[in-house]
Every structure is written in C-alpha cells, then in structure tokens.
Image (tube, rainbow, N blue to C red; front, side, top):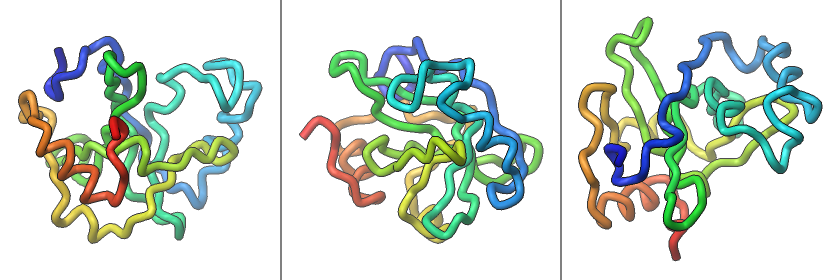
Length: 154
C-alpha cells in the first residue's frame, strides 16, 4: 500500500524538467497524439504525464507532476502528486492534487489547475521523506475542498 492507502503499482515515476511552459514548445510537441507513450489523448500511458508541468490559467508554472496515485478499488486516478519549489530536489514540497481539479492540455503537454501560487501557502503539503501515512477520510475531503473539487467518490 502507498502512503495514501492506495496500492503502489503506479508510484515509481520520474521527476520533471525545470524549463518554463512559456518557452518550451518542444515538450508540448512531444505530447502530440502520435507520441510513442500511448495511442492518443483519451488513452495514454500514466508515465506520459510524469514530468508534465502544472500551470494555472495564466500559464504560470506551479510545479511538475512527480507521481500519479490510483484508487485501485474504484479504478481511477485519485491524485496527481505535484512537486514544487526547492533546488535540485532539496526543500521540494509535494502536493496531492485531486485529478478532478485538473484539466489536461494534450497539445502543450501540461495540466491546468485553476489556482494561484498563493493557494499552496495553506495547502496540505509533505516532502519525499514524510508522506501522509494512511490519511483518513477527513484528509481526503480537506484536500478536495482546498482545491474546490468534488471528491471523486461522490
């Protein structure tokens, strides 16, 4: 089991690059429907999303996707783990973003979160060495409420 009480089959994902979404057009081109990591935008390898940028509606970089967490019992993506801040992995904070709070932009190769950077000042966060251990139902509800999303199990 993962640190979120979700089975671990999808938790060994790569970390992202640090270039900006405004200047890195090559990354977006790599996410075209003909990419080798999946058959298209509606069905793709989970690894395709790891390393993608998370931006807000203004295109400001918020962080990068480090892992996806599955709810195996329900057969869906529960959270995208976003890495933010730090330098070369030191001091980096991780955030569990509800999948339902994100919008995938296949052409640009990033996920859009309708939030400002200040959203993360009070967001539930953790670091690589201190993941939440078996969070309870209230933790899950608090995370969804923080990002203004409806819990996926409702």
